[in-house]
Amino acid sequence: MVQQQIASRGLRDPELLRAFGAVPRHLFVESGSPYADEALPLAAGQTISQPYIVALMTDAARPVRGWAGARVLEIGTGSGYQAAILAELGAEVISVERHPQLSESAGRRLADAGYDTVQLVVGDGTHGWAAGAPYDAVVVTAAGPSVPQPLLDQLSAECGKLVMPVGRREHQELTVVERRGDEYVLSARDPVVFVPLIGDHGFGE
Image 1: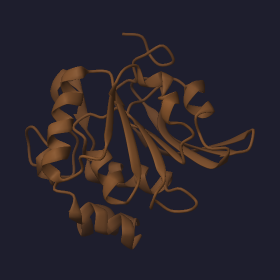
Image 2 (image 1 turned 135 degrees about the vertical axis):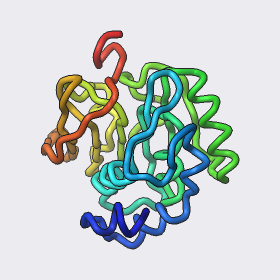
Image 3 (image 1 turned 180 degrees about the vertical axis):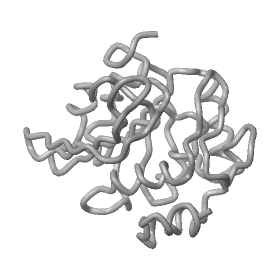
Image 4 (image 1 turned 90 degrees about the vertical axis):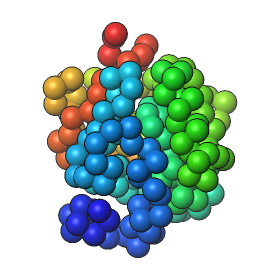
């Protein structure tokens, strides 16, 4: 998986590849082939993204000072796989999920895989988690029509980075935001398709 799906597509950072090789993806998958190059279904109509997309978002969110000790907010816990990757990289992770059953099952999976330091929160992720701010990186694993302002506000003013799919429900672009003081620099990357970001600052139900 690491060589064929990630490194072969241009993501060759040794730290990133090591993390994907270390996290047992099969512990975070409910059905289907865990190491296949495809998104797989989860409960509550959610999905776990294909390994390459998880790697792409992780690489794009890498803090300027590196992952070790970085404070990271994830919106959309899902199965817990993205949070596990971030924790394996050395980040301090807070993950918000609106579906209680997913958050609960992710907690069990993370504990089984040895990543029980991840802090899990149940709530509307479009509000972020102000109690843990500021964040060196924010990773949003669902697509919204725009980047929620609370997430921008909770980025560290010292080069905080946010990665999120932005666009319509049927088509989005992976968007990276870099905060430099009071300035936010946005850049659109690869076309992607994610489940919708539901909440006060996202799509409606």
